Length: 338
Image 1 (cartoon, one colour):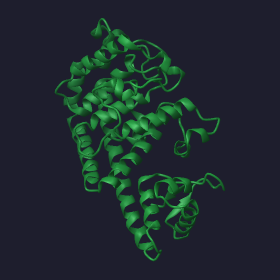
Image 2 (cartoon, rainbow, N blue to C red; image 1 turned 90 degrees about the horizontal axis):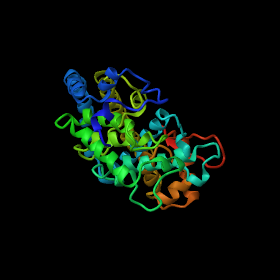
Image 3 (cartoon, one colour; image 1 turned 135 degrees about the horizontal axis):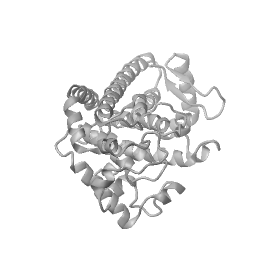
């Protein structure tokens, strides 16, 4: 990137509805560091509320045992990717993400599915933010997640893009991590770090960047509220205010779901206390950390037979603790009744 400043202030025009053609003076405000610093000042209350929501969710996770915490972070990551896919225009039902790629219906965009699997791993902490090749998974042989990845810069060209991205972030040195992540998400989309169709990469980077100094929380969820901000335009203040609102809503939703799951688990353990053995406890634990489960998944995770898993799921359903969500007789999926 030979002239970084010119590139920032003259983003390429195209068909992206989030960035329609703008007069040069208006384009300068999209990534003008001074405008973003002023926006941070004007959005101080919104930033404080967003940071408080992150802290509340982080504190809740910190009070749980490591296994449960790790599972709940995976559950949050899964739900977040479902919302990201909707925002990116490539929605995939959550039950499809649960199944193995080979079992996905032919109508599903397999490239989007592969990108979703990558995103779920990144939101659980895989890949280093400070090394974008590692974060994107480009250090492996046969890198890439589909045909569109062939359009990603390689070699020195990719290094130039990462240097430009780092230089852009450096312009907001000293700003809040939330501000830098919002700015970075927009900057990422205006340079060539990702090929067309890989919007989730910028979204995942931002989610991880906002949690970089948190405790056990490795990504900041926005959930369904994120659909309103991940791809919008607008000036710096408008964008940052909406971004903070989505964080507050997403973290509050995550906090509420975790509390509901903990209450459900306590109720389920009391209700199944008369069932002999520890298998019911294993099934309950799995339903806490997974949005949906199948008998086959329980067989692998809980180390119980598939017949035992199916019997226990049927019994839990009879007790009003779980429900089957597919309505079919094969590939059935179950979820906790919160």
